[in-house]
Length: 527
Image 1: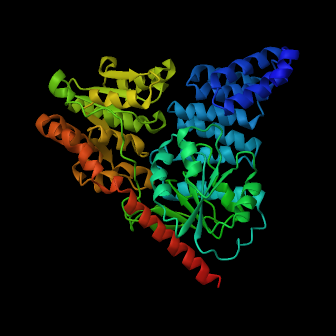
Image 2: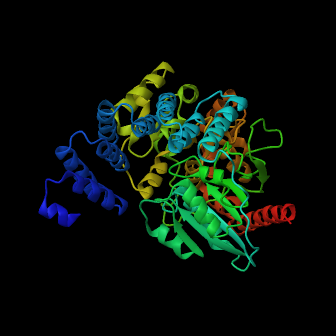
């Protein structure tokens, strides 16, 4: 392609194709330049606009990405991918209702568009006050629609000879520097190789050092990015996988819908905080904090409870815990580094009540570079002002920062305020590791119980609220007792490190025991 450009620098397709190649290599800035040149030469090429919008978004240039998407929708209003992309932008900026409408439109245009369906299932989890019946119906509708379009006759159970070791396959788009990968890597490393063979099925465009680690840590690495769901299922069958685990199903570029083709005898959902809606997904891994026996949440899968669901590798090479800033500055600083999609009007109303209960307190909001966007700041300013909180009490951090710089921000925060109904997970763990207690409101669904489940494992029930009034009271009580807050802060990291949240070997044993049980049950039923 570079040779073609040397011969014909005005060849738009060559710029476009080169951009696609180098973007996969991680050269996104250069890819954007070639997409822009391709558009200069072919200003009505919809595919170029679509890929340009995605590349700009990857760079954090959200305003430019949205503008490219708007131009694409003007050029081709019936392009499903354009509506889905715009939905992603709206979700990232804290507007799940608008995102859902755009995903719905994409599915109207392309009923078999699994990616838009997955993003829609992610977006509905951010909505407050949704009944378990409604949420289940939405998920089941997606599962039935996909099954009906792609595998209407159903797939025969995958059968193959028994192996000396159980073959476990993991399907993910996150085998890279990503929270899911950091959560799963200890398990991959700890797997008993005398009893298990590990295969990784990766839908990954760009690799990094952690990707290389995963490649070396498994018996078989398979890229499925260029395969259809049916082709990927055929590859997995060919590898004779016994237990297939789908990681973080609806998020990023993951592909739980491969399960519709019955790629393996036993199919398991893990790190997806709600049902897949797929009848062919056999189990969903959870624990009794996330999914108590009394839960009203509904699933197509059978729930399999393990003692500890959430685990995170202890953070190394990170800043030391800073002294309590309120003691130095004389003012209480709350904070949230959660995705704006989680910060809905009810969340802002509750946080405003907290700030009114703690006079002169401030709130820091940070998520990537999103709070640097004028439209996002204006949106949240209006919501907070409606709750009686003036602009001078809000700290919007819009810088694009490394993870170390992000963790350094916790030196400025006294107490983290959790979102609802979709609570934090990685953000909660990182805050706790940096010595910042997290106040959470416990809900009924899995997504509303992530932070609470972590705090339970740390025996920090004092930070778990069962009502909005209790949430405010907990925040007010902590803010009025700086000595207790400082003591809690100083000991939090060691408390987390010694807890089940960081017990890699125990969690590996729990999951291996689960996989052995699932496989033994299937074998007994198909003897």
